Image 1 (spheres, helix red, strand yellow):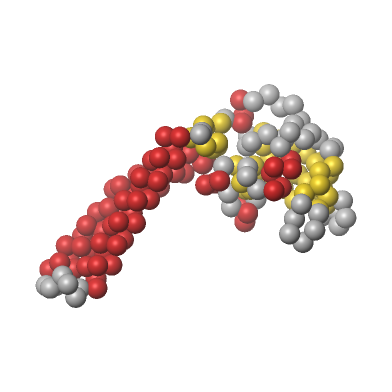
Image 2 (tube, one colour; image 1 turned 135 degrees about the horizontal axis):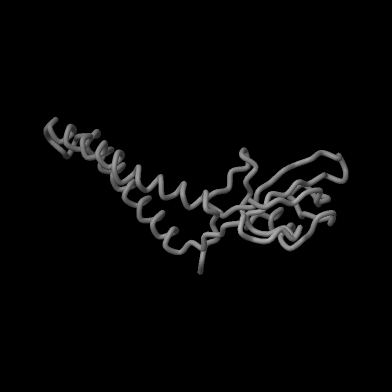
Amino acid sequence: MPIPMTIEGAESLREEVAHRKSALRQEITQAIAEARAHGDLKENAEYHAAREQQGFNEGRIQEIESKLADAQIIDVSKIPATGKVIFGSTVTLMDTGSEETKVYRIVGEDEANLRDGKISVMSPIARALIGKSLDDVVLVAAPGGDLEYEITDVSYG
């Protein structure tokens, strides 16, 4: 099943793989060589820690490459602006109760970072927003109770 991803998200994962394959791989190999030089490997904590780090790094490389292979990279800037909320769009919401404004960009799971205003397409808020339009009122089921938002702006790219 294809994994939706923005162009920025795919590029970020490609950069991480490149770093892990070059610089990080070399650092780990060097740490293993240094630990091995200390002697007995059975009781060498530095050696075992470096080997564990190597296993994690190689696993992460495989995980990222698999996600990139399955990715459906979406360039939102090429989609006509219809005012509808879609994957990759940036949505400005106004809480109808407090009149507080929030801005979210709907992105793939691996790109989500609430601090940066990026929410996963699988999140309850994103699922409630997808397909809605400018000026629609949306009800979001939240753990603390339902939240009601009005969509005050939708932008792409």
